[in-house]
Length: 128
Image (cartoon, rainbow, N blue to C red; front, side, top):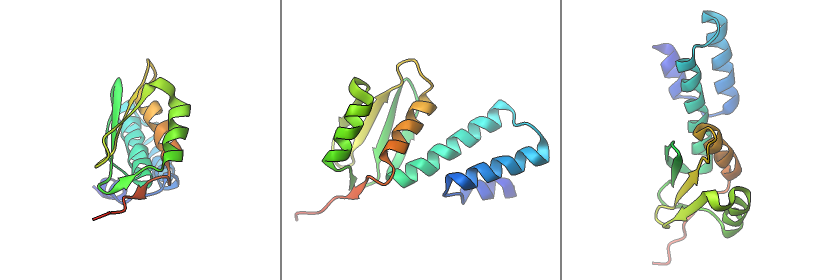
């Protein structure tokens, strides 16, 4: 139970790696379900730092930005250049991003997108 509590409080990738190592030291090599759990934990940490509120993985992964957050035009242009026709930006409140995996591992593709977005999100400025 304490390991799950530790996981719930992790907010840095280095802490994910430290916990993964601690568990491997205690219990031996991680089985695939445990490795998947750590992959999801890494994505959670990256999503938080990128201003993403929700992430759904699949052949077409979908990220939804936190309420009131957006990406500057320069960041959108850089993402469009990096991911080409595989990326689609939808709406604005909240902004959603869809990314086709194109045969690649959806978690790996989402990780690359989240790393590209890290620190880019800004709050929407109300004109009301």
